[in-house]
Image (cartoon, rainbow, N blue to C red; front, side, top):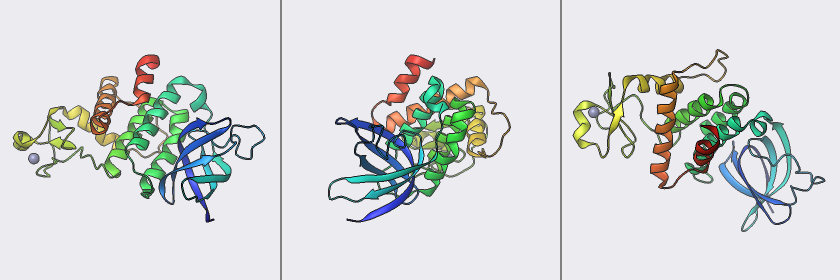
Length: 246
Ligand SMILES: [Zn+2]
């Protein structure tokens, strides 16, 4: 059987059986993959400790006819504040759930892998809500979704001042194209500038993350509405945030 090595971020885990786990990995090499980690919840397992959500790992995987199996794994980085601080856990989960739900298996997306890798230290240490929203914003522009924040999705003209935005059309709408849009909601200039700042954010920049709280809330609601309207279902992490964080 073919065995291969991947560098991956753990997007999601689901327990099954006595000590097993289905692990959803976002790999550098192949994009999103699902593999079984048998026995990983036993303390003496060589996989013990590594198979946790948000870990950055290197793993050896054997391809199976039905399911792939994780044979061995090394932790490259782990972020312990994400499991101890409820707000960090909630917002890291939001970003990871968005990426998991909005990507397809086995589509290599190096930009998405790098984004997850770069966002983790920020989610672990900085303002987790802002870090998650910056992550979501960058994911939506650079992934296959290509949500358009700065140009009209119909005519391509640069948006100036207050405008509209459409979830169904996937981005900003200028005043000239508003009649063609499928659904519109207000897109104030201040929200667009917030998105543009988030898109341009460099994760290595150590300066304090400061955004107007009203605009942060508007950005959060926009991303949640957008993802939920595309998926047609709710996000679990949103329920968690609304129940325990606000
Ligand atoms: Zn237009």
